[in-house]
Amino acid sequence: MMSVDNAAARLATRLAFFVAGFGIASWAPLVPFAKERLAVDHRVLGFLLLWLGIGSVVAMLLTGLLSARYGSKPIILIGGSGIVLTLPWLAVAGTPLALGAALVAFGASLGSIDVAANINAVELERAAKRPLMSSFHAQFSIGEFAGSAAMTAFLWLHLGALSSTLICSALMAIAMMLTWPRLPPSGEVQHGPLFVTPRAVVLLLAALAAITFLVEGAMLDWSALLLVDRGIVPEAQGGLGFILFSVAMTVGRLGGDAVVARVGDRATLVFGSLLAVTGFVILLTAWVVAFMMTGCLLIGLGASNLVPVLYRRAGTQRAMPAGLAIAAITTVGYAGILIGPAGVGLLAQLAGLPSAFTMLAALMCLVTLSARTVTTETR
Image (cartoon, rainbow, N blue to C red; front, side, top):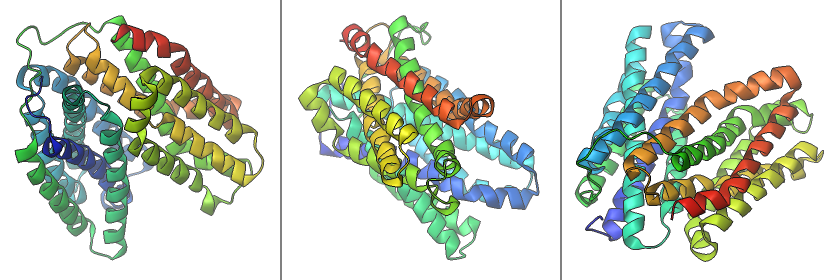
């Protein structure tokens, strides 16, 4: 068990989550600049973006193994430093090959800090003997908002892509310097085998995490089109649904630890997933903009604390080392947010976007039905 449990250690872990969110959100506004600089079409750009996901997934798998042997602290520091160093590279890569290599390195840095920060958070929560996961994940959401807002503001001020990334990297470097002395050494070091076949309960946790991440990815990529296609809002206001979803998710996570401490993990999974399903029902049946926006809010609020609970349960199960279990959940969940929205698009092409969102609601019901099994088998 982690030997240090204090405000400094929790601050360091929150900063690690913040840097991960800030870093990935800082890249998003740079995509149009990269496309223009390289003079590539959508097909080539999509292929290049795939390498970010590949780098992330590979790093996630390796992080679980390395954290089990060396602890999470060095991985957090290496991952955060990698984000700081590679973000400016994304702004100057002059060939598709150079950008692809930069995206692999950037994705690997994001994937490693994501897994290692969650491992560290589980250990801190275990030492504190009270819920902390939701507040940690809230910092990722806050980092995403801050990163996208900062990069967009710098670009709007015509600072240029390179100058904007250097400023953002400097901000993240400051955060990592504050993180380094406050991160306690991990007590979760394993000296046995570094590979363990995932057990049934871990696979279930990973599948439920993938569902939740899929919902988040679908809301990001498809909610605006759903609102516009139904004639509820004009194109210029299509993004309001995702904004409300994001705000609700962040607020829900900020207050999530108190909720979990009061009602427990099982009730959080049950009522959170049911609240999200209710949001989908309202979103798909309402014909008044206020009701549809309410649906987006309920989806975000309901889904906000599902992943933190699943990570907590991965840390308490004893079927395999916690670090490897968290890496498995993160990897499968990330696959859900990468691949899932494409599946939503395919189903939308075949049966319509409302049918695709109905499928998301049905998948969320699996979280409700699995809550008892998850919380019973991971005590």
